[in-house]
Length: 332
Image 1 (spheres, rainbow, N blue to C red):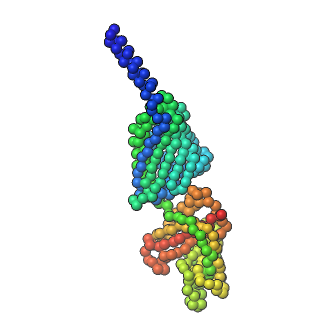
Image 2 (cartoon, helix red, strand yellow):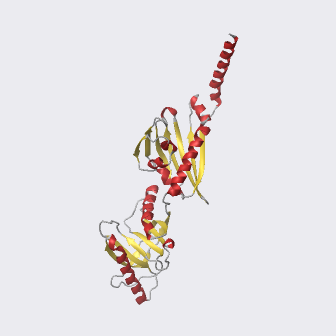
Image 3 (cartoon, rainbow, N blue to C red):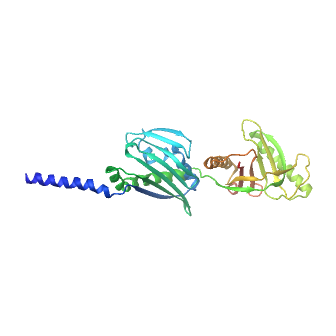
């Protein structure tokens, strides 16, 4: 009887302690893990900014191949929603609240009966690439079990975060690295241009013919170009004719002659991308520019997209050293 009484008292003491202890535990909890990834911030940001891409690296989704996911709202960024059901990982949903290219992402995590949380990502460029910081924040933890969960959050979540970050590193470092893009102000630029149109198959011939005519005009006029050659694109449709303007900037107004016209390249706010390498890379660079406009919620103008050939085959035989600038005008 004494033994039974002893254990009864002991159990009562334990229950009292377990009941009282949560009162002194914080109602908030936070766990964070970081990693350095050898890729630029925008490349990594886009892996996180679209919930559909989480399937490639998330430890929760990779942990349950049978997870059923529904994606709604925005395709990426603010307003994107991911709802899931999983026997192994539980049910829940995420809604993106903030998306600040290419620095910060915040999502509201609804875990049903397990409560709410904030899932945050920070991207900080470093000399070795980009430091990625993944943080989970819990608030208003319920008494008593929520507070106990908060107390053990670090030991529960850090290994999972580490696994996810390592997989994200693998995915981001093997992905196409997006080109560097900045916003600039362009001044109006006097130029000489030959306007033409062609289907995609004949583009090289049309450009080469125009360049020969422009060089002949400059030799005859003893005219020095004010910068590298450029190509204006007024539309891009590989199924029909593409309207182009092939030209050079000049220092002042000149007379038009034959197909060579004096033209003022438009002024305005623009996004500038720098593409280093062969011209086969230009398609991916233009795609990166389109993604940049989506990331920042920018709109295009009706002004032409143009490419500037800073280092081209006429002065450098190694395609890996070719330097092309791409400009998209931004609607203000």
